[in-house]
Length: 252
Length: 171
Image (cartoon, rainbow over all chains, first blue to last red; front, side, top):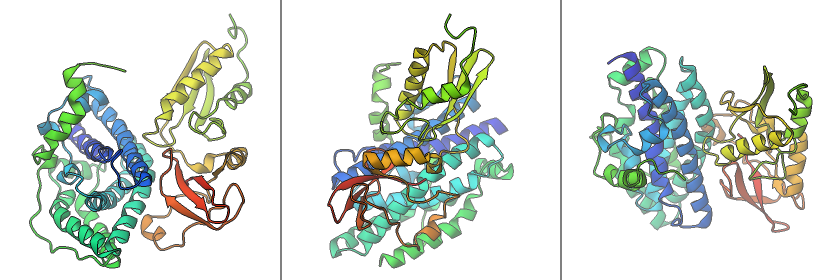
């Protein structure tokens, strides 16, 4: 794999995480438990899709085969998506959505903070822009984990179940393969393993304050970064890509 | 013909841009918000650099269009609007005038300087900010939601006059 190929792969991972989670959140639009939450989830989705556009445009530029952000988003198959499994998990109830968000936001925050110092100026500037938005996302999702965890018996039960169900998808966030390692070595990407300690620190402190119990470390589901996805991604893409697949090059 | 012999002065161009309203918060102009980062002549072409407030802000493309049509109306034919991402937009760039206009419009302006932004890890520990009601100026207000009608705002309500209002959040 050449340096350019590795960089393209790396950028796809960054963009696909934002794209798939942004799409998942947009599924709440019109269905949230309260109007304010509907607006908030849609706004977070909007931030993530905006970040996707920046990452995917850069990916297309690096690839140099004439694929722009739209082509990369709408015309790749599931095996070519590089998002982690966590972000493609179904929305479930509001607790599951917010637990998924909190796990992702805390990691995303730490990752972008590192990438802000990337030697690749194009990556550094997108990360700096995204970091401001993600900082806000993290405050909100953490707040919901606290409110639901330390809320009523029902909300506590739901948040605890969400954390238990999603825990096995968090391990993949910190695993490095040859692409991650090559990017980290060149000072372009981040050392993912080094993000684990601060991430766990925040998650642990939050769980404690929210009267929640973190599961024991165990089996980690993995594969998304290599294109091995859960059954859910195909359904997301069917929804996301339908228009461009059915009516190629349609514009509005 | 117009503008081909004498290029309008850049201060004049900035003044024109000061009349282009933000499409989502029309009380303030794109200059007030600090979205316009640079105006310059590149030979006989006018280049306007703008920066998005939020990555996904849908107003960004409308802003480009509004700037282009406003300047064409003033007779500038050769024109390019380019996007600049770095340094990222901050609410610190909203002018004093812009803050006053926001408040008069019923939107509470950002309550603090964004600076480098404290890490959320520290921020969780500090007291929430006091946001004054733009209508009655009472500081007895509560946050309803972290997000409002656009990505750049949060929803608050005044506990004294009961007015719900938008707060232009700080980034």
